Image (cartoon, rainbow, N blue to C red; front, side, top):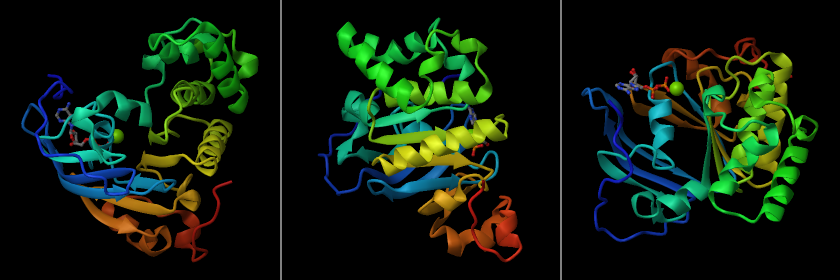
Length: 266
Ligand SMILES: Nc1ncnc2c1ncn2[C@@H]1O[C@H](COP(=O)(O)OP(=O)(O)O)[C@@H](O)[C@H]1O
Ligand SMILES: [Mg+2]
């Protein structure tokens, strides 16, 4: 069964402008089979934060992320993006919140890298000249320009993940959400994706990364949110929360275990 989709009616309470880029208010979601994926989540995100959403497998990270651009709508509670309820502003929300999912392969639709990145803009009926300009710029930014005529299915794992980021970035979102961005990548692939994400944050994007393996990215995070059993268990400064990770089934980085605090991963 499919999760609930975006055509459900929203309630009629007016929008609020809380000053946060994302405001999640008492959101719960139960899958059609009766399993409660997330429970009473309340969470605010400020512009330009770099948030690490940590939790062991099945803790509810993906379920929560899918709410952020209205792929799934909550059973109760509501989500505001830029102060606007997403149920009433789905198109604006999807422009603001870009999602990079784990299964980059399954999302490939273009025959070339260039066409793959152009896809979203073509759907929006942008002029060809503008599409060429925007796609070229993004491919250059991500060091993918030399691959522009290649078949996207034939790229390496790291290149495919960067291609998925390019497809999101070309739509110019303020917030970029990554679900397990380092899974199945080799070391150079993970370094390439990590440096891309860090650069996006430095150029003003709000970043949310969900992962059960935090070592790669922890030194860049301004905040860590720990989930377990569909709930937020901890939310705060990575340095302070580090010693608690293992009690939630998340591996504590080696440097921290050895008493050296949080160190860059590479
Ligand atoms: N389509 C679905 N139907 C029923 N339960 C689901 C579905 N998708 C995920 N779940 C359950 O919801 C819980 C949270 O899953 P998920 O959000 O994918 O966790 P995480 O991303 O932290 O690994 C898990 O117990 C998972 O089995
Ligand atoms: Mg997940």
